[in-house]
Length: 202
Image 1 (cartoon, rainbow, N blue to C red):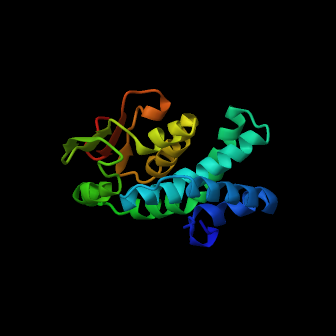
Image 2 (cartoon, rainbow, N blue to C red):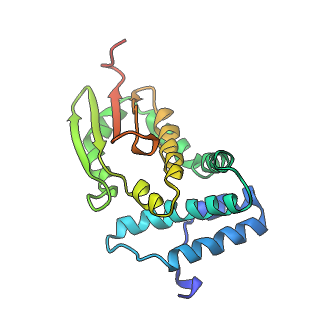
Image 3 (spheres, helix red, strand yellow):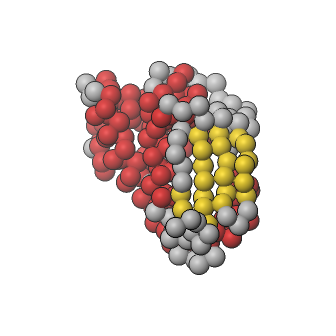
């Protein structure tokens, strides 16, 4: 497979270059190319999108860090620092949207449409509550965890979970992010809750 035909994340790679330097960047990029070329891509285009935009680039960086002698904890800390920079724009965008006083109502209206980005082919999702008080659902399986486990790096999944916490935890004073557990952190399922701050118990 020609590297020129392999899709690249326009967020991950440009964001990572200034953090790691040219030499390590090129190694990580080549590792990503190898991971992509040697993987059977899913037919579902959304799952492929997740692989290209996050899973395989993150895995490539993690593998390079480990090969360079970083202990697991140190490598994950480097990943977390990189993710904070790479996804800083997402955090700012959600904070801007979160200033809308009726943001909870908008979220409630569009949440199920937004979650189409997590199809049943990769996630087993149960909706539990969508009303004026809270939006609650849980994931019984996770495409990220299953994929990274197949590469022997399930621990990397928690760094992607942390991105959710960074984005939604600071999103809005009108919406309370109340996730308590994830599969990546050892639970049987991931719980998600966006609570309406106006109705939250004080």
